[in-house]
Image (cartoon, rainbow, N blue to C red; front, side, top):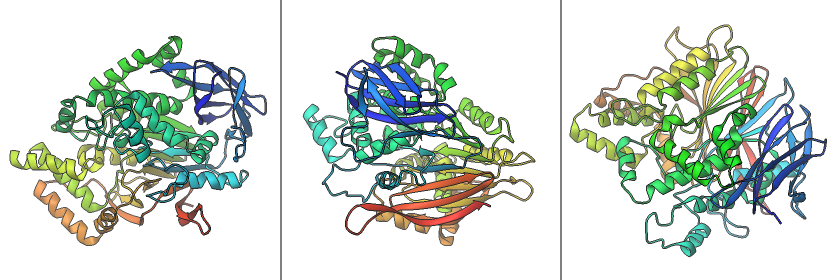
Length: 546
């Protein structure tokens, strides 16, 4: 008898179509049955002894909310018996609907029930509890998770115990994950959390990886990558990370026509065991990153979301460093400029912030100049060491890419068909803030442009982060930053910017509410509640576009 091991996760939902992701305990037929007669059925596929299905659900009514159940070989496995949560539902938007998009990044797995949480309440747990308490109330139409869905290099006590029972942790990579099976442990730990499991079953989600999904500062530089490839454990770690990401996150990001055109997805479903096929795909992605596109586009009515891969798509050669390889940069430009006038809001999801505190930006641009060799070999060695120690690998560390994104935003946001807003959604830096860029006179867009950064969903916010980023936004820090830039011979950035909100520190989520050409932002933090439990408290709410 097949059992439900993980899921369901409601992923794509639009019009009359949705996809629901599940993992089963054995090969079987997975089926989703909606209360309104909507249905979807598919066979599981096998990867490394695990059995998965992405169930396509058709016959949904646009603009309606439909409760659903999951069956494996005809036996109902969801909802779980005696569940305290309301029925999971699929809501498909109708044309002209308001779009509510909640986003954040960096979610370290919550501890087991009964254990003290060392990093405070989980914002996703708290969001789930609020929705479950009032199922008819406001909820996000989509949850955008901007990276670090799992931490391959920072495992919990429970996972370290599990790893120790499996292998000798005195051998590299120690208490970090080593292979595909160990990655599945991370997803179980994160997604079997009862509140999060129910939340992901009833709110559609879009995901993209960041560094900790593989390893801290993944693809920082060519020298970093060469050092990692020289270790005996790196190749298996990377291949397993890409394979598990493809299964657990990437497939659900894709629209129906993209799934139908995906040769790997078709081949994996047609073979009794797709492990070797997926491993070969991951090997090619490692040796030739431009062979794979992890970025994708989602349209929610007149809201366009472009989720951009800023990790695997990098060009690391010091003489031609770029955040995006040429094909990826071309894709981003095409998607941003496609059918201009058909969207009122352009959202660019990039795990790494485009606009940082000025001191951090200038330090990263200076470091990039040192590593290029602009100040000589000795400074280049110093720069590489500093880059790794201080995590200097955001957009500012790729100056040409920073300027190219600024130019693309200006072009997409200009003219008679300009959207009302262009928002860059980011995480990574374990705090939240709002920044607004300004272009030289006559070069700026007509749209309002914002950098919206929100992190973490559930992780530590160390004192050094609080102090460093508060100082980084100060006037003194800006002067200091220009001194760094001057030493590196770095030109002024193509845009200037100012912080208009934050910094805010805590486990938190931002929500964009987009209605017509208006946009409203809300930041909420998970706080301990009197008498136990936690709640989301609104820290700020503001109009981005009236």
